[in-house]
Length: 234
Image 1 (cartoon, rainbow, N blue to C red):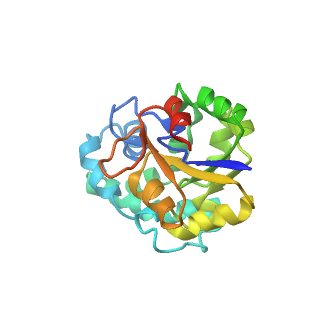
Image 2 (cartoon, helix red, strand yellow):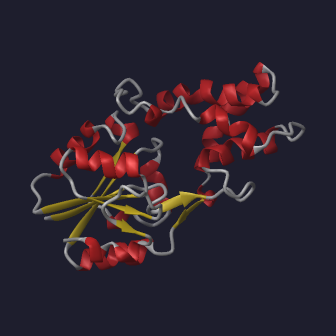
């Protein structure tokens, strides 16, 4: 088997931020929630963003989190992060807690999730060339549901989600879990848009990698679009 392991968010699909272009998925979800639930609060993306630069599992990838073993416990662990952000922009504690509990449904709104224009064609072409696809992503517990809603499920043999396996990229254990599960393979590559999580993480366990979409000067291989990935596989 020849295997390609893909990151998801920012590589294959993305959550839009139509209410605040360029805000980032999490900042946008927090902003959308406050604009809908507390329109009197004049919060901006710039004001919310600093509060979510820590507190997510992927901010401390060196720490495994097997205790966050259900979707509810995973999201509950983030409530203090969201509360902190809302209190930081002026909401009282009760308001902040109420809005924090709504972020989950806002973030998961399927109408906000999209596939990049080059994703399906690239996956299909590479499959025809003999590659099997899997996903390894730092993501929310509902990743499988999002992939299904986007019509991508049939392209992947396995989906490995940090919220399920209890460890985040670039921790080498995340890659080892995926490799052990897929079994023997002739060739295996990691493809993703994060130099730190995808490229450095893969290289730490001896996997070749391709950085996509976001250039980094230290990446040995870079494809600005997924259409160019096939030409780099060797």
